[in-house]
Image (cartoon, rainbow, N blue to C red; front, side):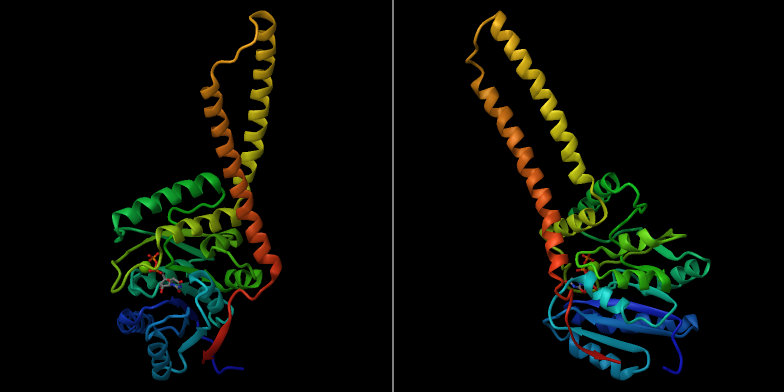
Length: 312
Ligand code: UDP
Ligand code: MG
């Protein structure tokens, strides 16, 4: 039995953040020390190729009782890095944040207060968002699309990772064993009394975002396929509608043939309609593929991440 369980667990995924870590350490420990509550910080090094691993190791040596480090054997992604932390937390209130200092550690106090006020999930939205305009527009589009496709998921901003959860929620999330999951959405599906508060946002302290346009799109697919069957269901309705419309069209043509006679013109219109429908069919196939691919990943039951070593 460890002498004392910490009250707060901070979980931070790290991928190539060598330039930021020292400043993160300074601001984070300052902010947490001010709270006067026991805490632990769990860093997951998600296969960084820079010096992040050595730096984290040194943090652990500085505060061996408070700082724990999980080393992945490769890059398994931000959400898996957080999951690995979730599997090992000891605290009662769990806070996640990014390592790049886009989530100011000084805001943690607000989350703790909201959590102590009885909210089992404290979601956040970023005010004064400090990202490139292209990224902001993409985020807006994401959030819009997500609220259309998954209306039961009530959140303003899905992308902000500075969030707090009670232990019960985190244990539930850790027990799912899902591969392509999206943590804020998963948490919300278990929440009894969630809230959403505004937090500050800063520009990246150093380096660049790890998310390319492509990766962001993949992420959004993860979110939608994991929490909604709506994209599949749209196609059932679309299929019904198109079948019905073509049925009417066939009857119309048959009647026309009897009254006016055969008709061989309008070939290109026909092509246009055909290509349009073909496009829809391909899209539908792609969407079915997105689901099947994920089912495949789940049933293969490969480990969702591989831990090389743990410092604690
Ligand atoms: N991250 C990670 N694994 C990855 C990509 C990112 O652990 O494969 C971490 C990264 O170090 C940071 C957080 O996830 O702490 C958010 O990443 P980033 O800042 O690149 O994303 P953005 O803020 O642009 O959404
Ligand atoms: Mg960032």
